[in-house]
Image 1 (tube, rainbow, N blue to C red):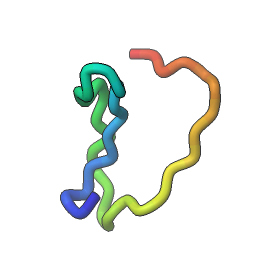
Image 2: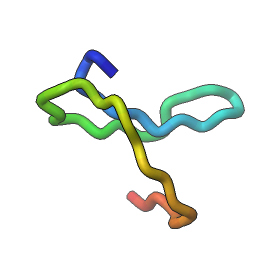
Image 3: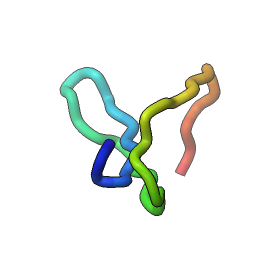
Image 4: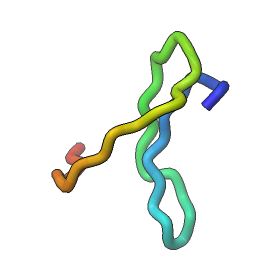
Length: 39
């Protein structure tokens, strides 16, 4: 996004569950796989 933060969304109920900060340019592409996201 243009605020330089990539977000991982939970589709139901439509909430952000994780943010990836520190990008210097807008995030315009993402690659997904079937691995779990851990804390």
